[in-house]
Length: 298
Picture (tube, rainbow, N blue to C red):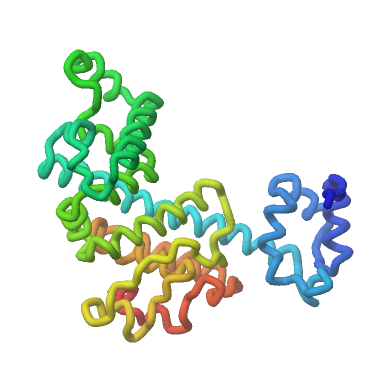
């Protein structure tokens, strides 16, 4: 089937929105559509639509715009937390891998990655090599200039600073159980649980990096929730689910409590939620009594 919808002018886009029952100032709608694509905004008016494609009575453009602005602030908030967690993981990965296997073992000893077969190991080293070549960091040029005659690869504590987070994740997943345990112990977690968290955080990070809609998303990578017997705070008096953004926010809070306890991140998140009381928190997976969760009360 051919796609035959023609491009619409900004004025036609605004008229289409208004003709379907949304109310608002036409000139303001045009102004905002010139800054934010109609198709991007349509993701934020999805919950206001009826089966006949008209909007529910009382729907205003301001309602939609506030959801868009809230989501933007939420992405920035999450990226702040993920950045801190990511840097901590890079730090711990370099530390534990170096002390267990050596400075250059990642590039010279496939046995340092017992979870990877030969194909997986080759792909990982090829990615690291490519990302090192693309780097414009001064320390990379300095190392090659001074030590390149003897070493083709950077020391582990340098290379973890030029890898993408996706490569860091592959590095972690391929590492030995002892290395994984050493990193996960910083967060007081089993390494299997922490690995699932990293997968979810990487997916969320990618959504944020591409400015995607976040607030009402059902998670594609669902993080493991620690077992009730060992981690009751995740289950009582509030059950933390793993399919919505509340679960990821709780993971961020839990991790920051351990690596950045001085952070005002939880307070800033609560301030953001208070600033937008009209945003349905149920779509983010927030239980009604979420603030009674021990993790959030700490």
